[in-house]
Length: 61
Image 1 (cartoon, helix red, strand yellow):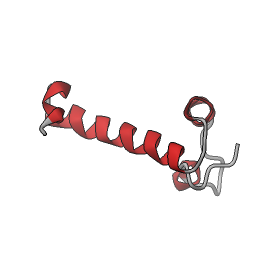
Image 2 (cartoon, one colour):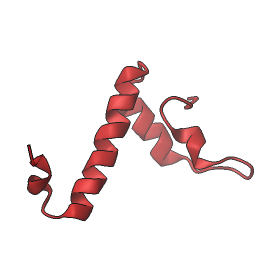
Image 3 (spheres, one colour):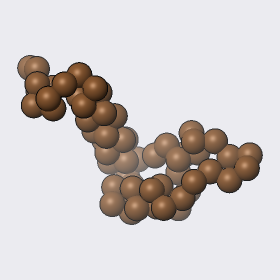
């Protein structure tokens, strides 16, 4: 039911949905969310790598 209203605007609600999706994907793949986010935010793709390598279902610590 319209929980996006608590985000303030549609752009914030979209960002919140992305974050919730990442967190739930981690849970479904048995990944510790804190470890995942810490690792992903501390790295950036090297030449030849793409951002999809950082998705929870493809993430290698």
